[in-house]
Each structure stands twice: as structure tokens, then as C-alpha cells.
Image (tube, rainbow, N blue to C red):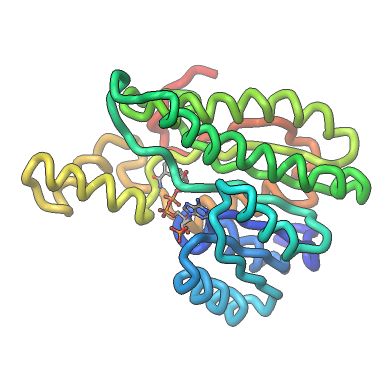
Length: 259
Ligand code: NAP
């Protein structure tokens, strides 16, 4: 399917691995040129080269921490006109409510609420002027079904979700749409790290830990970055202009919600 976005330019934040990489790959397959970001330069450059070779699009790699003002400035200055923005960053660590202090919340808000808001504030005016814009924020299914030990993530992502719900409706008349994708468990480095934590805690093998978690998902498997990325690309497509301020869960059926 031709998504109608060939030749457009996307910033993909936190995109050298995992879900961000899945989004970058799918956008590149649709003919979109990329400004690709992550902190680690080596993995980032490898991913950028893989994508250039596979899809023949321009990929500008910017190694920077997207949760900092300097990092965002570096990423933004690498792109001329931004048509598509995929906001992403690592998630806050799990924990227990008495252990979280103001500094922990500020760090979570900086990474998972204020960074994507700053990126939107910087790029929405150009999108509005050019009458085309697509923003996808990678959040988490915990926005709809909060996970107790992810209180920092729950709080920060709820703030972003509220911001998007309002702002998406203020820019939609300009063919600029903002939506959130809510991943459940996907097979990425982050999922590996969570499974390794179970190995350390419970003395089971990695395979046993993974099988137990997969069994808890109605689809009986983890999602893939490719599936996630293709969904992202559709939300960035010419055909997504009437999808405004939505929160799409991709979780194999884990969150059992009636609406
Ligand atoms: P991942 O496989 O660990 O990949 C994270 C990517 O983000 C890497 O490319 C990493 O590269 C980059 N990154 C991390 N922090 C960054 C920063 N501050 N600035 C720039 N780049 C940064 O993670 P993932 O599984 O794709 O998860 C992506 C997001 O989805 C996270 O917020 C996560 O909490 C959320 N999520 C994931 C799942 C899941 O099952 N995978 C489920 C729910 C929610 P560098 O380390 O080199 O910077």
C-alpha cells in the first residue's frame, strides 16, 4: 500500500533500537527521509546505515539525549522541514510508591511528558503552515491500564495523554494530526531487561520467564517492532488525516477494556 508520504521528512526520536527503530524502518519503506536519534552513536549509525541500504532514503543520524534541551536542539537543527514526528524515549524505572521523590517525578516528566511536548511545540507551526503534519507519540498500554510498579511512567504518560487530547483538537483543522500508540509487551531490549529481572528474582531460565509472560497475553506472544512500526507508518500516512487525538493499544489483547 502506498501511504502517500514518499519524499516527506520525519524525525524519529529514540530510534536506533526497538519500537522506535520499527517506526523508522516502516517510514523509510514508505519513502520517508529520516532524522534518526538515539544517545549511543555506534548503534545509531549502524541502524541508519541499515535503513539507507534497505530503503534508499536519506537518514541523518543525530546522537543526542532527547530528554535534554541541547539534545532536542541538535535533532531539530538537523531537519529542514519536519512533516512527521515520532516521539519516543526510554521509560522510567519500576519501583514502589514510597521510594519516589520529587526528583524522580521531574526526571520522568522531563523524559516522557515534557520532551515530547517540546518537540511538538517546535514542529507544529511548520506543519500548520504547510497544511500537513503527523505526530505519533509512543506511550504505553499502562496509560489505559496502569501498572502499579510503573507509577512514574503512569504519571508522566497520563500528563502527555491529556496534553495531546487537547492540542490534537486545536491543530486538526490544518491537516495536522496527533495520536498516541500504546504498546503492550513487545520483543525489544526493554522486554529482555524485564525478563532478565524475573530470571534474577525467581531463579528461572530466560526462556521460562518469557514463556510465562507470553502466556499471560491473549495472543500468546510478544508483539514485534515490525508490527508496531507499520501501524505507526499508517498513522503518519496521508490516509490518517481524520484520526485525531486517539490512543491505540497494541497489546495482543492484554488490557481488557470495554471502551
Ligand atoms: P528499547 O528497545 O530499549 O529501545 C529504546 C531506544 O530508545 C534505543 O534506541 C535507545 O538508544 C533510545 N533512547 C532511550 N533513551 C533515549 C534518550 N533519552 N534519548 C534518545 N534516545 C533514547 O525500548 P522499547 O522497548 O523500544 O521502548 C520504547 C518505549 O516504549 C519506552 O518508553 C518504553 O517504556 C515503552 N514501552 C515499551 C514496551 C515494550 O514491551 N517494549 C511496552 C510498553 C511501553 P540509546 O540507549 O542509545 O539512547
